[in-house]
Image (tube, rainbow, N blue to C red; front, side, top):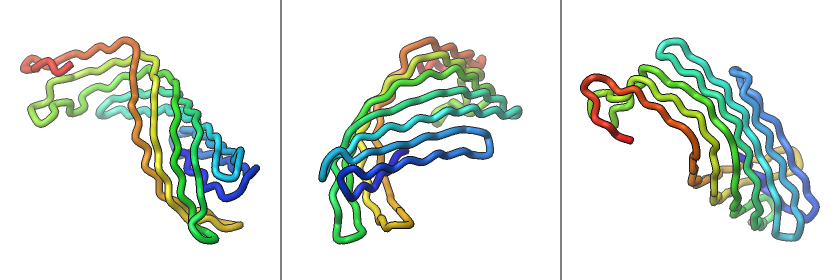
Length: 159
């Protein structure tokens, strides 16, 4: 998630995130005016476990615009909104998919395009050398593709 914490017109912020699974995240923001910004972020996920088995491959991108303002010299507040696109090709086996009942889905295969709309609010602290913020992004993720679920013998269909 991109939390720019902008403070001035023409300010540029960018970062790269890499974790131990070689997942990659990119964030970039540009303040186009005294209180307005553009942003983009992207994420590539590849996660594999053997027991229980899962193989998750996702690529997601997101762009948007927002309003930012200063709170005193170092405080920041932002409201962002945007949309995104991505793909997933994933298999999950033997996870608990019971939703409060005994597990009913044994295997879930997903091959899909992902569309999203989001709204985000951030509050934080920014200085010349250090930024710290808290953000909340609400996302409506709209998949469009193929889903296959293999149910256990006692399954109730939930999809």
